[in-house]
Image (cartoon, rainbow, N blue to C red; front, side):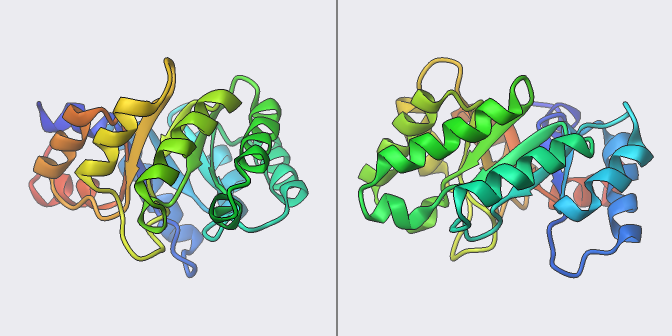
Length: 219
């Protein structure tokens, strides 16, 4: 798989707490140059970034990030505001405590509410795999499918671990038709990225691949 094709799968990401507009602008420029799928940035920069990139790049942002335990009404408000300000894609974090309580009905309902707000906009659901058991991961595949979300996403990159090959393979075996997979967190090489894609991921959340492409002088 060509590196240029891998970059087309990348949500070029900057979600550090101290991210500045200059840094956001720079990753927008890099994303456009290297043809990534989107830039994934903090909600507070969505409006400014969308005005900057226009139709040249899709803007993705995060909701309930990184812990996921905001009330559903707050996540809904965040989502509506992000879309009004120009976000093209939404990555939400589930309430992991509800999963641990076995309240999959609440998790599924929250995802469905946010997907209803998103409409035709892409909704990706971050389940934070490093905190879940195998059974919980499978149940989340079922909930994400039933709620009508577009993607299940492995990780925030802010917890104890990121994406693993095993989790992407597990997702691929258990998500329903039409649900895609995003691997995120700790993807640090083109070889690993290619393997994630081969296992079933169609999006990759990372900042490192564009940096590698720049270092290699990739056009």
